Image 1 (cartoon, rainbow, N blue to C red):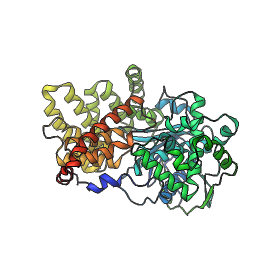
Image 2 (tube, rainbow, N blue to C red):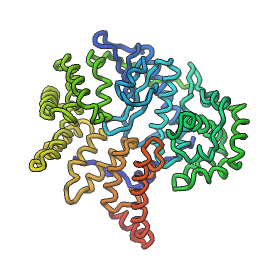
Image 3 (cartoon, helix red, strand yellow):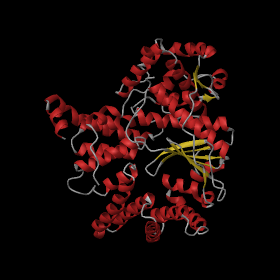
Image 4 (cartoon, one colour):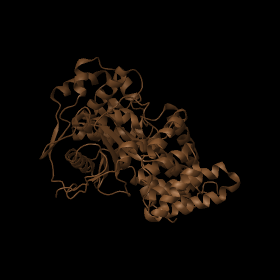
Length: 511
């Protein structure tokens, strides 16, 4: 598996672009209740009617276009369409994340897949807001990763969550459900808001954090001078500055005057109305109806991609076996069963299912990837035969790469098959890791794989740049962020002596 080297400039600068620089469809009539449609930027599965699915497809494409226009994002490294799963009720959220909070939707950026699940149970407006909020995170992580303060990460997503589309216009920042909270509750001190993580404290603390972060972001983004100040502030915080201490200089008033300033601003709340361009993204889209197996297993398959806690595995495996048995020979049923058997069931049964699917269709990239991963797990379980199993894993992953060279999981898994080798990573394997990270920068495991590879090749400057966006991740655990911070500090410490002696530039150019 040979991967073209990414330019050093792209690694250092290309992933950190400025954040805030501004015919009728056909569908099959047989099968289950889930429909599927693919647009240029999204792979959408919906248990909704075709009209609703098309309307949402156009809106998410137009939303992506709005973000690209406002942030001057035209071209970037290869991207994967974001998978969306749209359900008519909130109960489907619990099929994917049974023990999670009761939410209308969520976004998952894991190794298995980057995807979002949302419900339109509370009305399309609410579901749309959840989707836009989560996609704003996805867009930020892809196009402008940096160690932004948590309040800005969430305030930015909240600012864009309330975008509204009419037939010929786009409304941005016109209103928000957060206004009711800001008008009717005691505000938290901004010293607390600016320095805290997103989901900490009481429910009241969390509500205050999101509402006040939204309004502060709205204020800073509504004026070109303030926007420039926000960009400088965000860059300074990303470089390690104190998000609380730096705010008075950015906003132009002391922190104890900020609440009064924003309350006055909220009284007028200047929004923006932009023309909505004609959308070519949904013309000629082909809507297909998925087989009945999707009703039973499509969301369970997503749960498997996220990972299942140990205590829940036995019951879940029994459920998957029972449901998959209803659909003999069905691709989704067999791949879902193979995932479950492979990860916490009978791995030999998983491999038999996967080999059968590949024999029937040698171009099935997903089956090839899962079988490659299964061989990697077998290598761990059988150290004496590890070399043989890893060689087979590379065969399957190499075949998948030829079919889908921009699949980040295939790239990442292939690189991991070489991890125990003395010269790991070779220049080619480092390029494999960097490409996986560039395609799916939202996935922390891909990012950390590339960081590890760069450190092993003494490319500390690039490693620090790639690691930095994780340092203020508002959704990671405190322990995880502390571990990333410690690793970042160690990388920086190893970088500085080389830079001060003049050797660093030579090492970087020769690496």
